[in-house]
Length: 271
Image 1 (tube, rainbow, N blue to C red):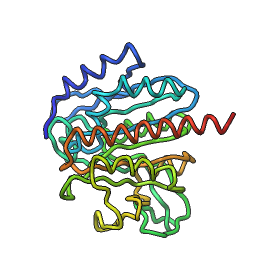
Image 2: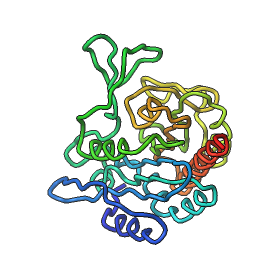
Image 3: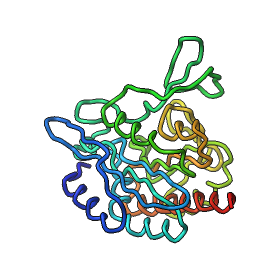
């Protein structure tokens, strides 16, 4: 569904009274210049939230736009800092299209894997070994901009990427995570009050969820990047685009609050 990015930008700038609102870059698509925003709230430990890589997945950007004040208050109470990139692909968001107006694919392209000497790829098949990984330097302008800005900062305590699935039927949710799954089980259980959790089922040609509705997949995405730089809690949340928007907001906020709590927990364990 197409969105009004000019109005979106106005609302984001309106949060300047409770957070630092920066334009980390501007991109031009179809002759239109779009500002790219980072919302920053200081804290003892950091959570990075990204959203809006795909333009036909509006729920994440809309949750962050409409609920940021409540999100910031929840984080502040727990001494958690936020770096929020609310809408990474504004022309796709405005057009309701998966890719940007140039037809480029802003998702992934954060890193590459060397699987054999001189052979590099963006995704690993399950269990595939690799020699090393490297931060990728190419990709669409939106990806280059957000990747460059994210890489300027030390690794956060937690990182959450909010997406939607435009292919599966029905109101449903699942997530990509790495490592210990115990921190995410309750989040998924809470989310099940708002949409069906896809358990032990195929979501695409590469991936099948486990009994908790979780998938592990090294796909060169921002979540994969955070794994590689040692972030202990990192996930990509999915709700289907067939899920009612209010249910998507509820699920997104469950995971956002949960990741704020995980970042705060990290702060407690280091004291």
